[in-house]
Image 1 (tube, rainbow, N blue to C red):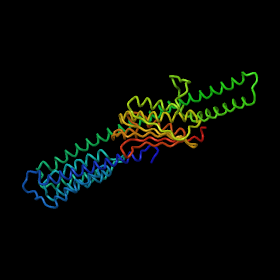
Image 2: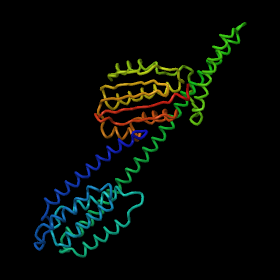
Image 3: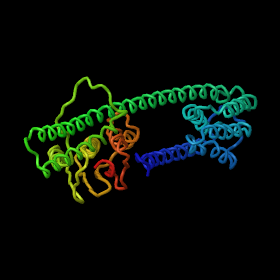
Image 4: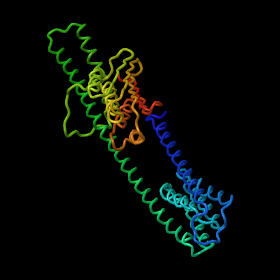
Length: 388
């Protein structure tokens, strides 16, 4: 599984698209076979036979690969329709598949347009024009020319619109990353400021004493060293994400893992049934790590409440010497739109973007993907070796 769960999610969506294209091809095949012998006002067309059935299948079946290989699909569908013209059969309804192939090529072509496919299709149209058995028949070739032009323009418009949406989604994702880094920077600023405040108070209090015994001095120095190490670790992570905060910050301690029970109670009151399971013994770690773990759980539960509704979510926290792991799993069903938003972090929230940034800040591992039962799981592992 990839860091963001992109592999399983996009694989699921790609499978749906392939299945949809297969259904489109089957529908076109049924339409083509059912429409054999239709069209054309002349009595001199060739009667329908086994070859006509085979040509109808050749013209329609390739639509199952219309997204994977739009250029080849256009050429093969066009070849089937050209063979139908050369054989002298009535137009039937299989020609609709050719128009859909033109639309698919215009809509799905890549950055480098397959010029060869356009040239082959243009040649096929030209041969149809020259070889049409009845030039005065409106089905050939004028109707196919006009319909092909319309299908191309419609497909090209669809492609342009999709590219604009992807560009806007990418810009929103980049803006979300920048905003999330700024928010993390402000929160880490609070952590560092709090740690430095503790150091100053400890040192100032010790200096104010007339006499300082050795045991008490060791305790003060130990506290200062421990707090200073945490502040130094957080400051290193802070470099590169700081930016001016016009709203100013607060020196109040940020939420920690100790606040998770209160968060669970809050979500339960909001209508989301949440259970909390803590494994291992909580250890003394930096406030930044605890803050990140808390925010990940908070955001995951908020997304569950937003996208899955009033369902059940299970929060698991696992403490160990090496890492702090948090996992949030819900059993609510999400649709394809939610899956797309989860992967791309487009409209609808930037929760997964923020979670991924928080975990990456500490060199951890992050996973977010649908569960086999139809729910969603978020899992984060934050290493503790460098932040004690």
